[in-house]
Amino acid sequence: MITYYQFKRVVDATVAGLALLLLLPFMLPIMLWIKLDGGPIFYGHTRVGKGHKLFKCWKLRSMVCDSDQLLATYLQQNPQAAAMWTHHRKLSHDPRVTGVGKWLRKTSLDELPQLWNVIRGDMAIVGPRPVTSTELTEYYHFYADCYTSVRPGITGLWQVSGRSKTSYDQRVMLDVKYAHAHNFKMDLAILWKTPRAVLMRSGAY
Image (cartoon, rainbow, N blue to C red; front, top):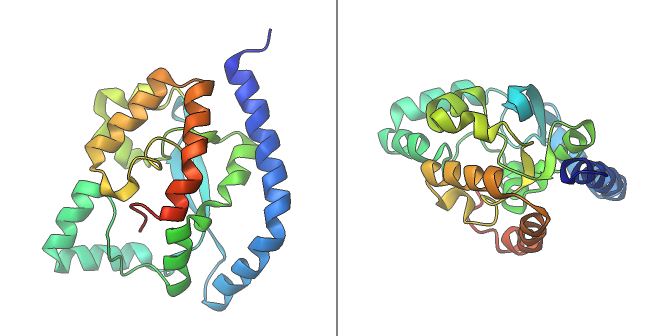
């Protein structure tokens, strides 16, 4: 008998493949817009997946090319922004984000390439947020194994629960809640709420 996890994997790969094919014509002009902005179209950042496996989480590039150095300088010069970064790991006014990147982030379109991650098996359509090794060590502590018991998702409880308006501790608890209690009913509820969260742009920046 097919298990929940096997069925979820088949559904995820099938839906992601079809979505990527259908969205490709829409993505092409966006990719051109990013290219005209300068730099590469895609940005891959190393995240932690199921079983502590590291993978490249792909996005449409929404930041300038020297974003890491720019962030370090900006946080050093702005204590208030540094405090916000420590608390949320996000900035409401991020100097690294390009003009097209602001629009991509507000609409969550920068995450469309993660459909490829789903096809590859790195991610699921619904799951915890994909996090870095540093985040897993600094914020998850003894919840790390719980987090890595499932595949991270394109959408999840965090995305439909206020996104960047939540503190990092709240995000951890949402990820842990999903890892402990996830089932088809929860996945469907999250998927049902996701379009509204994206359209309302709640907590997106």
